[in-house]
Amino acid sequence: MASRRFDPKGKESYSAVKYVQVEGLALMKIAKHCHEECASDVIIAQGALLGLVVEDRLEITNCFAFPKSVDESINDEKYQLDMMKSLRQVNVDHYHVGWYQSSDVGNFLSLPLLESQFHYQTSIEESVVLIFDAPKTNRGFLSLSAYRLTPQALTMFKENDFLPDTLKSLKVGYDHLLVKVPVVIKNSTLTNILLSELSFKIKVEEGSEHLDIGTATVLEGQLRHLMDRVDDLNQEAIKFNRYQQAVVRQATDKHRYLQKRAIENQARAAKEEPPLPEEDITKIFRALPVPPRLPPMLMATQVDSYAEEIAKFSTQSLAKLYMTKAMNTNN
Image (tube, rainbow, N blue to C red; front, top):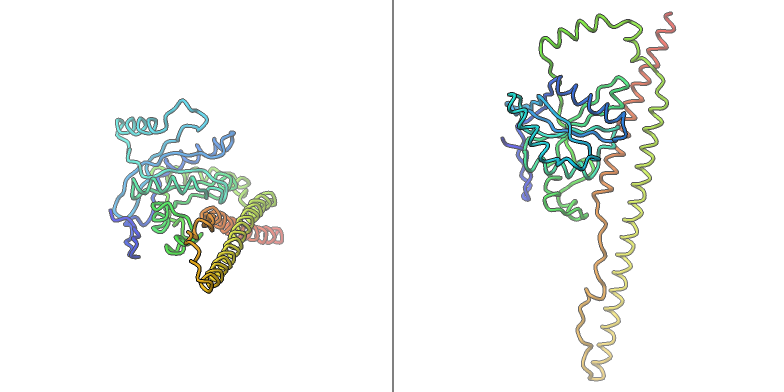
């Protein structure tokens, strides 16, 4: 399969996988696992995705949960191999095609997630990470997204260089770390018939719960997350500004030092004395460590995700408000 690549010459090729197709059974297993873990003390639920690549789509037909991190007696790698071997014995798709993780809005954007996805994509070209937002799904909005690292981000992690010059040369910004892949949910014909029958059995008053306009607590939580990330991003900006100021001061001191030596050598030459011995200027003025730019990039990505989510949620809340107002007026 020709996955999308990025080489130093700037040439790119594109992956043949255009979208991700998730079976309803796999989605229900992911949702069940994420809801159970979110209800317990475990903050993040993770698991493996199994399936295969067919033409231009990545089909996810099954999945299984990773063991809890608190259980140190289980070897994660051995556990995954045993699970895939067991699934193969019962004639179930056992090819590893990615992994999934639970989230709450944009808190899934982190360095461990990027590193994990980098290892997946370098070993399995077509792999994706599915992000399931359990709190949002509980409010009646199914949230399932698939992501892959961009070619620039892959190159950055391969070089393990997160300095500003490298990011500038690769043209990597906060919006060029992950690329979103379309997700399609597929059910069998029998499942669709069952869902149609169940829809007729839902009572009218139960089916109108999606018009609930009590969204103040949800919006408040998202705004708090947004404020925290903005504060963190501001602290990172202050650190980088201090670094730039220190570089300017060091350059000024270096220039003064060289100018002073040049004047002293001129005076010694006028007295027919030998010039001052050569010195390694880099040992006197050592290069200042450049702060890595990946953490602030992740924070900026989180801020963008929270802002986008707040905008969508506010739009939906306003639509509910106008619909409820119109219904009350008609009554």
